Length: 164
Picture (cartoon, rainbow, N blue to C red):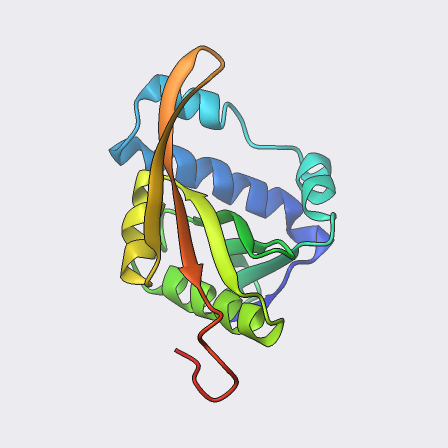
């Protein structure tokens, strides 16, 4: 796998990856009603592209043939909005490589902390990457109760010579 920046031509594939990951990976921890509320259908390519064209960085893990398999989004303040791997590559190390790429970019940009609202699967992954749970968030969307976790990773202690 190779890491590269998002291109507008990736939008439809990344929207499909998001939807597939929510339903196949998220299905291990959330009910069918929760999944349907979370991602009722893949976003259109136009909607996805518009959403990620707000100044955030989007990093994409691609195959040797430049086919996207995973992506992660980093907002300027250190917020990770989306982090999804296609179910066929989940658990193969692609997510770890993608997260390492994001972390390197965040350190280079002198972002002092990363934070996220993580699903159950993302929580397990991010705990292994050094994140801490701040709080569980229980809320309702579309009449469906669901939960995630506020998590953070402090990067401020990682200076130029002390990268973790």
